[in-house]
Length: 512
Image (cartoon, rainbow, N blue to C red; front, side, top):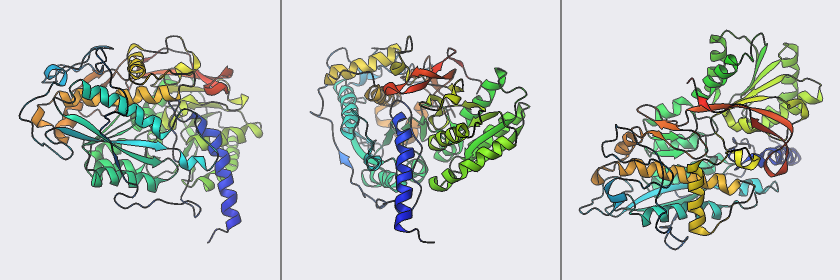
């Protein structure tokens, strides 16, 4: 069936409404799932090699390098690290050969590694696709993201690089609304630029992740706030690392935390989920975890992967939840479907209790109807605390990352938190890469050796993840602590929006 032009335009207008409603959460530390389905109105980028053209930039002159005292803080390596590389606190210098001082006799060791340089890929979020809906984020742009990476990489190179090798970034844009764009970015970095590792700090997800790690055997270090399936780590064979907990860990802790609080006792539970082929199995994990804890799931919604179709299913799903007597809903769909469901239920006078997790960045919901008041979320991150003025929001490592950027560029952070959150994530990804790479023999820097070194880091510091995280053999997702947050309808959120999540417990070690 061919969709007529008027139907396509109506669909684009409907996308504009929902994207405008939820993209406001983007880059305040919340990352969004893919909002545009594969419709005839979607204009795809070519998926061939070099489709969008990688930009190689050594970083020289793009930002002022940090001076003395700006050495990189990062993780604290455990005793399993043979080189003794360590970072023990904010402002500490990464050890490992006089903080990475030049070593003679260097040779090319692997793809992207020469005797003098290490080529790294950096994925840059381009909001151009969302711009057609009139959406933009003041103070956040592709140029701002590149400037942050350039400043931290200049700092690293000023302090000796990776044991004498200079880090050279290759920047590659991608469009959040277009998965073909993401695959094109994968191919441009791995097959054309042939980088050693790929970094992602904002919203890259889906099959393109496995394009990098499994298909093209390239290490990838990403934020991972959308819920990275455990299967992806396994298929990546040690080449995929994330800051957030894996999707499977998130779902198990989601069920465990609210069971332990007694929140689910005697409740008739519903699950609002989707049929995204990359994430469906994690919702199975949530259901099994709930049932193993003795709870009954009386209805589960599997909304279509196609945004237009899934949106049309929501009114019926509200009715079915209500007919099944569901009074506790575990939210495991993307942010678009979640907002639509809550508003549709509110319009029908249906007010169940809602529960969320870091899955699809739902733990920082905002701007929802008053009926959402009191909803609870379990989260492993304190992203957004700065915007909400939560006491003690800025940990020492976070403050150090921000101070390093200020010294490098003169940037002053405002209260929106968008550049701040992006910068400290960038800082963390590069610092942990540096700690692992500097722990290796200078002529032993290979992709497999780097993977092993990452898994030897042990306890580490990650900006916006207090109090500590860890990487160990077979553990590829860093966050280890969680806390509970509650939606408070009358309190301010990012950018002055009314209704936001506020913590009601401190951080504690997660069960899984």
